[in-house]
Length: 386
Image (cartoon, rainbow, N blue to C red; front, side, top):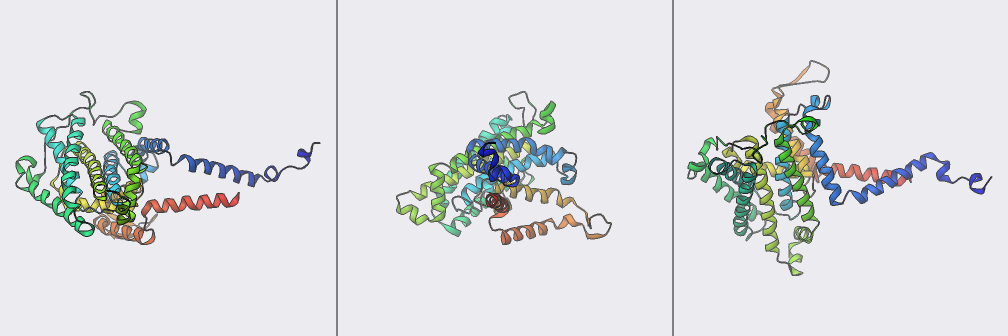
């Protein structure tokens, strides 16, 4: 018998320790891979592919969630909006109360182009995004001359000016308080009707061509945002957030970088607003109102400002409460017929407020912070067992 056979190592003699080492090795490899751009984009694409099936069609999960295809598409659209807004708030430290101007302005631009020029979805997205970029440049040039709360109030004032202009002076273009109706969205590439179901397995997973169209933009938005945040520009954004004066002392043109962050964020909002028009074939005047700007702030903070996917979680929870929980008429004790609250859905704003306060109070870094803490706990647990 060889010495190796007579004296087995502790690793071989202790299966539990061996399993812990394997788990730690896998966790270490995952930590190396999860930060890579290809991994992030690939996992995002997988999420986009599975999300509508899990949310709207999976036998048990969808029955519990009560989700539906249109809401899944809307969550991705608002998710693009939230990712762009987080580049400004979470990574650059600028709080804008006027992002409805880019969201709603792009929605109107896309709708007007569809009614008067072309209803091609690509043309609508390009026109809406171009409007948002140009308007973000102008509004940022004017608003960023002031900082802090003054910047926030200026963005709010400009957005409200746009709302009232759309309501009356520009009613011949926007249809005033009735919103822009009669938007005729054409076929994609002149062949694919966006409302049609995708054939075969694609239809079972993704549902409609519209969702696939929006999903491509969502994955692209994640890829672009990730590339920006891991570039020198992203490092400067974080430096400005941490200490603007120190960033100026090292020779950075802080105002120019803040303007660029504002424009990039406006571009994301423009893409989302254009997709919102394509999704509903209608632009409500409400899309320019200050409450839309407030909604995106709540979504971003609820999910976790300063994280890539936290704002998307905030969007999902917010829209779920608004569209699903708000339809619950009677709240009963589980497995009984005892009624707790009548017209429960009527109080969805109150429920959302309670959730928001609880999350911000207990976990200031939002829903994504909860996931981060769980990941840290698992890492320490696996690492401690090795």
